[in-house]
Length: 443
Image (tube, rainbow, N blue to C red; front, side, top):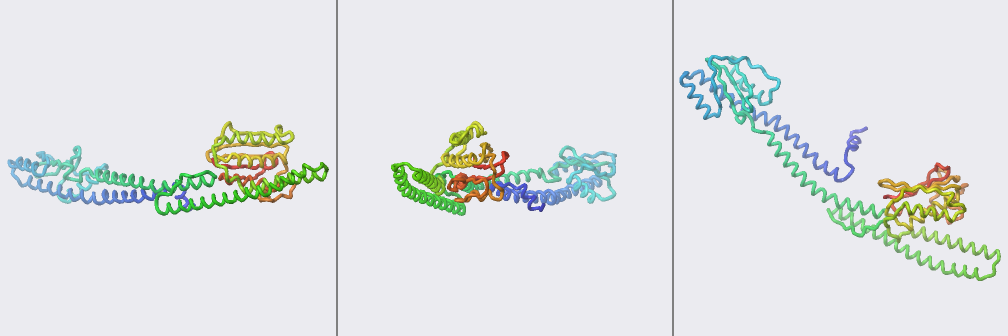
């Protein structure tokens, strides 16, 4: 696996998450570099500079201790305490053991030891230790040990972590402000995506208005223009087909009436059957072209719709109720076009009854999709010809003909309706031996 693919696996998928990483990554990197530079370089340089001053003071005090008469040393020590803010103690007759570095020494301790060693020279022993936050320095003098207690503020930078805390707080404050602005920029894109998704599912989005950055507004205006063109095209097609339906059905009705008024005979019965088939085919053609475009989506109990539709089709078939089994949850509220979806289901269940002895309808709902499976124990369809079955006005030549005796539009109409909901229909091999048609709808 390449490094790019490995990194992509852990990157957020959303625009806000990725934008946030683009924003926060340089800040974290900058803080890391500044922290390294401050603590590892500048702090060390400053500490050594202060340590040299302290070491020079200590060396001077030792030199004065060696050269000043004993009676005057107490006054000198008091003056040192006042001027240098050191606490000086003299241990008469003592000696300092050789200085051994400790394993727990900090950067400050090491810097102080190095500088004092350079200042006092190799012939004089010294020792450093801590008394609370203060530094305790003992150096051999002429007739004893001079102990100098140095406040922390004189030997090192006082509370260097405060600098880092302020820097981190400032960075977090800037990040919070940037996140608020980032949310404002991402929100219009999210609304545009939701509006496009709802329109793709056949749902109305009347309250969508463009706002946000110029590029986002342009995309939103393009979406609105596209939606209006599609709705205008569907409306014009529906109006045209309504006129065609009226023009064709009027003479067809007159012909049926004329046949009814004539004396009954076998020829007229055949003509009447042809007229009924023509009317049924005309209804199918119009339904396919119209695509149920005028119906609005509404929250519907999908489980009740599946049960009612399956039972309604079964009642029209010989022995239908006994040949049907329906599995569905108690309720399943989903936003759909109920009349259109009922027609889609009717086509699939009717095909299953035509070519199978037993029919099973199953509804299963997930967090994103609802699946309606219609299965039968008929002869089935070869895998290579399953997509061919959806072609309009097309009949299969195999033993199983899914549009046998019809207009060749049953599956085409069903898939058109499913896709108008933002879903689809697929055909597969059923566990019962025949065909399994699955309607997948977005929840």
